[in-house]
Image 1: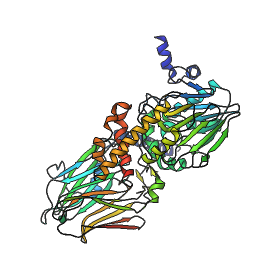
Image 2 (image 1 turned 30 degrees about the vertical axis):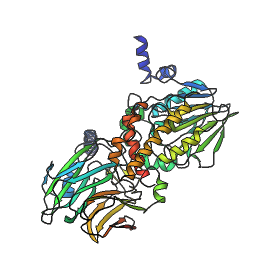
Image 3 (image 1 turned 180 degrees about the vertical axis):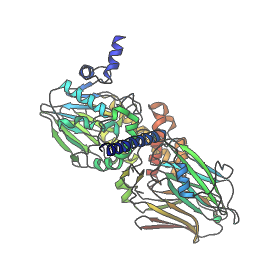
Image 4 (image 1 turned 60 degrees about the horizontal axis):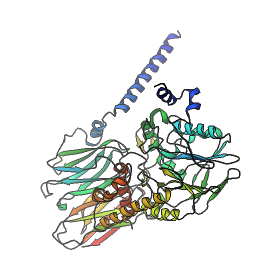
Length: 267
Length: 311
């Protein structure tokens, strides 16, 4: 009479113990999270790995400062009207929100040479997945070790960052029409990731961050970045483009609180 | 052989032996001057072996009670420090002062809870704690293992505002707590013992170990210059030896490092250079001047770069 429910309790207790043992084991082994991320973001599409003939991803071996890890993505094949990279998806496996950014690229960009700065909290793979205009996917990845010591992904001076919220810079050398030039768009923004770390779901609750960066030349978008909390405070995008004629380089920043900031530069 | 084994036994902490061992070479406490005691942290990153005891921590003994200044890099170090206090004096601990948020200075807080002291910090310490504690918890529980167990992130119940120094009386002994604008962090606090003119700098001063920038390079240079001018007799830095003799040179060396990297980073930014270019070239001549240079220098350059970009 009493044995049955007791047995059930015992069994569920046992299952629970087994389950927690498995969870602990998985955490200790850092079971690769990529297969499930791949399914979540790319479904059953095939991704060609080690696409070193197409893409270069530069990332430091060790994140010197967890809050600011510079990464660079370059294409070895120039953009052309019939063959171009449409999207570059950046995935940081072990970040709170692994799908970190999508760089939508115009064929008019010419050369793909883009740098940005990411938060990297722990040992992780950083992946760049190029989606071609024909829909095919090509990936390169780098392993980045976490920084040691007191480095935390939190901002260093929250008050200073907030005080200059929305301030922007377009930094570049004096450009020449027809010549490739490097430009950098930076916006002062805390890119605040939210504080409550939800251990169970492995994510933070997002709070206030830049979710869109649109960079255009003469009203034609060159790069559109859909971004999130993996981007460092004061998000920065550095890129190469070739102005075919005189005109206006414009950057428009949109954030999760529907604020918009913009800046233009005449070339 | 026997003695070696004995000191090894002190570490896991057999209850009876701990009292006898607290003052042995495993956790030495040094007297800086009258009533001022500190433990000098090792120049390493936190690990299970050093149980996070990498920063300088210590205490000031007054006629009525004791102020602990920074509590240690783990719960275990907090316990060792609490024992050292008990061995030195029978006065109770009335204040635990945290000079800033970094785990090597603050993870021992919970070991003093029983004495019900007042926890004191910079007015921006609570916010800094909130923003970082999950990250620190996750990382340091792993890094420190057993030594971490028991650690709690205790927010100060008394805070010090910039421009409004706080004086605490330990009984015939006044100490002055001063809060700074962003420098090493955005919430640095120093403690000055009036009787002996001893200044506890927290991590505003690093001696021998490379300074680690987690605030503002401009602010740190500015505040270092002011601190260097202060009329003091003894200094307890955040890292490195305390005393009478080395601190003047310490400030100079730290300022030379910070000023040099600032100058070189500014030149790179002016030339539209990148963080990668800066970390590959800036400040490399300073390599032999600092312990742990390889571990923190590029980080300093990175942090300074993104600040100086907005000048």
